[in-house]
Length: 251
Length: 200
Image 1 (cartoon, rainbow over the protein chains, first blue to last red):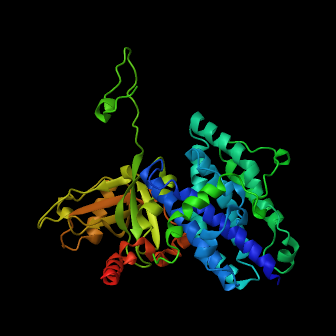
Image 2: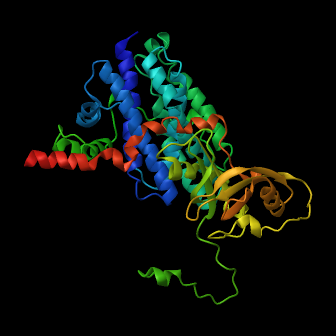
């Protein structure tokens, strides 16, 4: 088993969960209705918790402790896809991102329940209930608003068109892809993407929304290699602001 | 421009023509029932606003079961809940349900709930098969009335309920670990005491 390949996988997954968890938490107190505010905030909290679990696995493999990894790296040291760092804008975009990302996330962890790296397989099995709720939540909203009024459909369609190239960036292949597949750690981004396309198509087919021609969408990648948009560094600055006042403080 | 005073904004708009009444600007309500532990009875927890039954289920999950323990949840449109007369003191609500009913066709299952204490929640006691809510109440009286005071009885047609499926029960798998969501888990008092000791 190649440790460097495994670490790369864990870093990109953990960073995805942490950054999207933080982004989604920005809606806390400002959600479109009270019940949704609570649900979205809870799921954001789940994502940060999942990032902690993944950073803990990295720590067991010799990396720094989770707080240090999460709060002291610069943007170019993060391996999250660009999709998760984009600013929230309106709620329609946050919902579309939630749907596109969480569909991939749930499928990825489902694959990882069979990972040859046992600690990751155990984690994937343990959090399957959280992921089931996240996708149930996303699918229900998309089906609801994707076939409600001309305004809701139009808004979601616009956000879907905007987010799609970034969503394909989730599946940017790792330089260690073959290694991961051969060692049975992870079945690979290509296979994941194929499953994701099927799932996304199945949900969108139940709405008045349209998917673009997959062949014509140019994926916006680079995040996995540390090439990010201008939005990530300000997010990191804000997220680590309190931590950096006193890194040794106990909370 | 709309007024800064919400009372002014709530006034009906002045219209010159005959126009339809404005629709409600709020979602309808759905009743939420929670099973705190496998084997325990479902109890009424509260309501959520939602545009439909499935959305109500999704929203109820985090609104009512993000803390403590939960093994299952279900929701139903408030308009599907039929209630007996509310009583107090020593009066049993079942005594106000008159016997006799007219059968109205197909029999379906109804879930029955008791309010055993004023100010507490309705708790599920079982089900009956009846052709109307009224018939369900009468059958519930025969089946569940022990003479012990019940202040209120609810009857809900079972197939109107959005239940949690067997596979969905994993939704609450990690809930017992989320102790950090309880205010007491912060141990604020202990931390303050420790801090005050330190600065002494």
